[in-house]
Amino acid sequence: MSHPRVAVGLSAAGIGLLVLVGASAPNENTLKAPVSPFRLPAITGAVSAVMTCVAIVLSTAGLVGMLRAHDRGWSPSPRRLMCVGAGAALVVANLTPVGSSDMASYAAYGRIAALGGDPYVVSPAQLGDGYVGLVSTTWLHTPSVYGPVATWWQEAAAWIGGHRQWLTIWLLMLANAVVFIGSGYLLIRTAEDRVRAGLMWVANPVLIVVLAAGGHLDTIVAGVTVCAVAVARRAMRTGRASHDVCVGLLVGLACGIKISAALLGVGLIWPLLRTGAWIRAAWQVGAAAATLVLLYACYGLHALGPLTAASHLVSAPSLWQGFNHVGSMVVGRQASATATTVLWPMLMLVLAPALHRHIPPASAPVVAVPLALSLAWILAAPWSMPWYTGIAWALAAMAVQGPADWLLIAATSTLTLFHNSGGHGWTW
Image 1 (cartoon, rainbow, N blue to C red):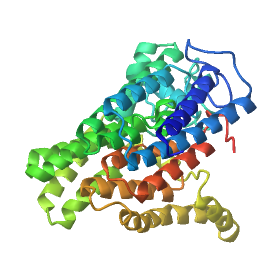
Image 2: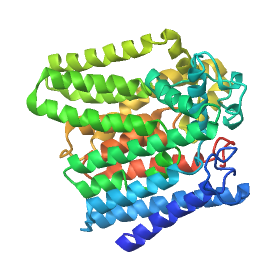
Image 3: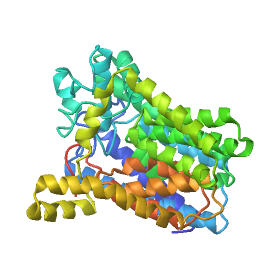
Image 4: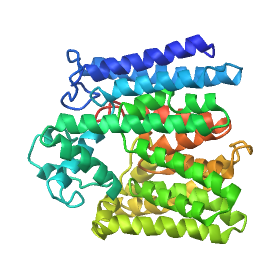
C-alpha cells in the first residue's frame, strides 16, 4: 500500500466512487434532491451507502500509503499535487453534496437573511419555499448556529440564487472549493516540506471527501487559520504590534464564522504567555475580541442563543453517549447533561498536553499548540463531526510528520464512516 502507484490508485478509486454517488443523487448519502445538472440515474440507498463507505476506506488507505511513501523518499511535484487536488475538488464541487445536508441549511439561512429575516430567530421551517424540502429534519426547526461572517457568506449566495435553491447551493459549493484550493496553494508556497503540505491538504483524498464534497464552512475557517498562522510566524520574527493585531483580527474573523475557532486563538497566544510576551498576547486578544464584538453587534447577543441550545447535543461515536446513558439512570437526564457540559472541557485540557508531546519539537509553537488543542477538542467534545477536523488538518500540514498524523487520520475516517448519510439519519 505504501508503493506510490498503489496509494495513488486507491485514492483515485475512492474519489471516483464518491463522484458516482454525488452524480447519482438523490440517494441516501446525498441531499434529498439533486442540485447539479451533471447527474446519472439515481441509485438505491443500500448501494449508495456501500459505495460511500468503500470510498472513505479507499481514500483513507490511499492517504496513508502516500504519506508512508513520502516518508520513504517519494517526492512528487508540488505543482502536480496542486493541479490534481484542485481538479478533484472542482469536480466534486459541481455535484450534489455528499455525506451531509449542511449545505441545505446554509442555503436556507442565507435565504432567510436575503429576504430580510433574522436567521438567528427564524428557522428554515418558517421559510415556506423550496429551500425547506432539502433541509434535514434534525435542523429544520433550528435557527443558525453560525457566526455573522458565515451568515453574510450564505446571504450573498442566496441573493444571487433567489428562489433557485440549487443555484444557491452550487454557488456555496464552488466558493468553498475555491477556498479549499487557495488554502492548499498558500500551504504549499509557505511550508518547509511542500510535498507533505500538498498531501495533507489539497491532494488529500479524505479531505476532498469530507470538506470539498460536503461544502462545509470548516473549509473557510481552516483557510483563515492558515493565514493567521502565517502572520503569527512573521510576528514571531519581527515582534511588531501590527502583526499581532493582524493575527487577532484573523482569529476574530474565524470566530465570526464558527465560534469553535476560539481554540485557534488560545493556541496562538499560549506560546506568548509561556515566554512572558504579555503585551503581544494582549494585542492579539484585544484585536480578536474587538473584531468579534463588532461582528456580533450587527445582529445582537441573541445570535449566540442557538449555540447554547446546540451545546447539549451528543453525537456518535462518543464516550459521552455511555456516560449520559448511565448518568440518566443514576442521577437523571438533566444532571447527567450538566455533568457532561462541565467535564468535557476538563478532559480536553488533560488531553491537549499529552497530544502536544507527540508533535515533533521541530514544529513551530504557533502550529504545535493549536494542533494539540484542536485534536483534543475533536476527541473530547460530545458533538464532533468529521468536518470539524478541518483546522487540525490545516495545522498538521504545517507541522513536521509525527504520531499525531495517524491519530488525525483515524479520527477523521472513523467520524466520516459514522456521519455520511446526507442528513437522512445515520447509516451506522
